[in-house]
Length: 225
Ligand code: 5RP
Image (cartoon, rainbow, N blue to C red; front, top):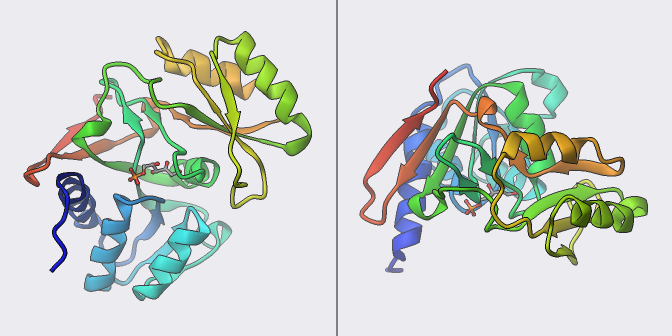
């Protein structure tokens, strides 16, 4: 039998916990990554009567492999719930996402959902966003210009990933360090021509964060409205 690491135990507990929010008849957004993977596997075991929108090719393959129906976003238009991981979560429930390069589709899917549930192990909880390099999807033509604008906005370094997104675009990672006001930075990033999408998900998108520790104890942090 394969021994699971402490982090893997936590990811599994958080991911499986969120599967319980999914009920027959729902339209469900499926995120990308090693935590929400456990949600998808749990749904595959249960086989609820649902239709899903996947946030990446990788997730679509996994979901179909476990027997879930995956359709294009416009088939459903809106979703009852979306479940996804995160790279960082601050106390207000602002997020950094995009470690897996899927944040553009992830944001589209989260915005389609009535409830956006985030699943993380407790290492993702931070006092301030920013230690994790901020992923920014750009059009190829503008990559250099956007990188310069990111430095103007305070990024100490900007690196370009070797791999393209599922949308065929380059992804930059910007080292902002601590981000004191995530919604303000998000607005500035949206205003840069050539930026397709950035990895700040502001707290207003989030309904709750499911957090698990290494001993598989799960708690929910619900956003105060
Ligand atoms: C992919 C993401 C993931 O949700 C994020 O990177 C967290 O992944 P993991 O659950 O593997 O730690 O945003 O683009």
